[in-house]
Length: 341
Image 1: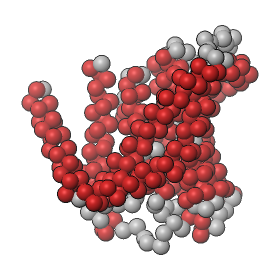
Image 2: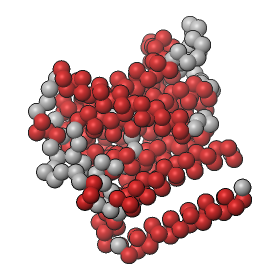
Image 3: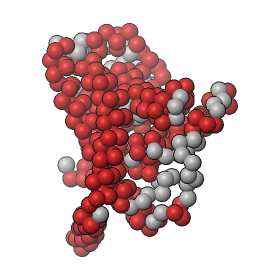
Image 4: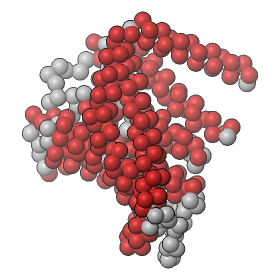
């Protein structure tokens, strides 16, 4: 076992030294790639995600959350077989953006509102790009059509809801019960607690976008693989059909997976399980988008982002595949450390 760990650490060392050497040798490209990534994050992720994330986290910590659960909490019990308290996390998770669902699920778990099994089940479907990012940044800014953004968002939300509903039969049905008022703080205190956590989450996302953008400026990643690694760069700068775009958005990208891996470890959730449902959700989103396009056809010109066709042979495939594999290994390694916690 020790020999295996030493060998694994040795290859990790070589991989990291290799990446550092690339950054030094191609420093000009690295700086430009990092700048492009930072610009993209500041123009898309931060404006669309940060305000909503602050509001949703503030809502969850304040007494307003008690009112919402009293009114609509039964939806989470009936449709998802989850406690009433999960309603806010599901609603805001699907509307707010990728890390929102994970952060709010973590809030529920730490407050004792849900157990680890329910938290795992939530994380199988409470994962979505959010209306701000998908409708505004992807639909309006990238495809020049707000209606396209709405359809992309609906395809992602519907796939999540279908998975959540299917998983509701996995466990014994919850009995109807009254929701006890949860502890809450004043609105001002809730905002003070929510803002730093939301800002930290956006900063982490931005850091990953900058890192992968810098890497992609050196290692020319095939366009079809880029959204799998970093969805913001891949989708906003790519040239994909709308169903494929919906699938990539539903998958979320390894960049986002890395960010929420610490949350998964708190629930002792295997990354393989999380990854499986991301793939299932991607397939569902693909076909839901095709169905939406059948009933609401869109002019093909709206999703022509570039005139250059995708050619896998035009880039360094070996380095690109190694980078993708390295990203997956990083997530697996982070998730495996939960056993040692």
